[in-house]
Every structure is written in C-alpha cells, then in structure tokens.
Image 1 (cartoon, rainbow, N blue to C red):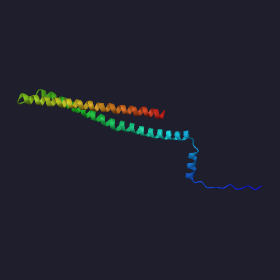
Image 2 (image 1 turned 120 degrees about the horizontal axis):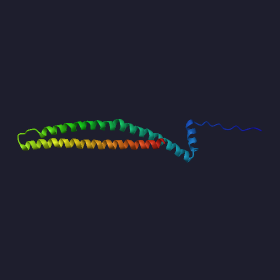
Image 3 (image 1 turned 180 degrees about the vertical axis):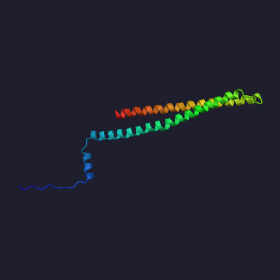
Image 4 (image 1 turned 30 degrees about the vertical axis):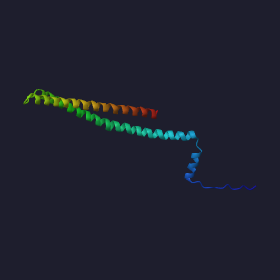
Length: 136
C-alpha cells in the first residue's frame, strides 16, 4: 500500500496568528479585552494620582501658603491704618475701608484655594478607590 504524501503548505507567522484568533471563543476574546482595559486603566489611574499629588496638590498648597502670608500682611496693614491720622475724616474712612477690603479679598482667596485643595483631595481619593477596584 502506498501512502499519499500530505501537502505541506507553508503558513506565515501572520496567517498562523490570524487563524489562532479564529479558534478563540468569544469569552476568551472578551477576557483579553478586559485584561487590556484593566492594565491600561491601572497605568492611567496611577498617572493621574501621581500628577494630582505631586503637581496640582503641591501647587495648591504653595498658593495657600502665599495667600495666608498675604492675609497676615493685609491684617497688619488694617491694624496700622485704623490708627493713622489723615488729613480729613473722608480720607481716613476711605483708607480704612480699602485696607479692610484687602483683608476680605485675602480671606476670600484662601477660601477659594481651600475649596480647590478639597476638590483635588477628593479626586485623589476617587482615583485611589478606582485603583483598588482595578487591582482587587
């Protein structure tokens, strides 16, 4: 009995990988997509946390420090202006009002920066929660 030789068709690497993809079940394909998503999401989440902590939060804390210094100066100036002698009462009133306005502006700036810091910290906690879910 003679055996017939099997035809040997060379398959390229590309063709081999394409065919392997056809043999995968839909569940396997979805699992690969989920794994890719999780890996990419972990990287993006860590990057966001790093950026928020080292850049945004640090910058906001420095702005707060500067604003507190401005408030101290404005309050000191207001105390000084309260007891300055002016040419007339109208000038005294205007100087005192201007000094008080600077104190109020400094306090408002501090409140705004503190709100920004709270938002940044909240975003950091959201990202950390997401990261924990992704890595669980």
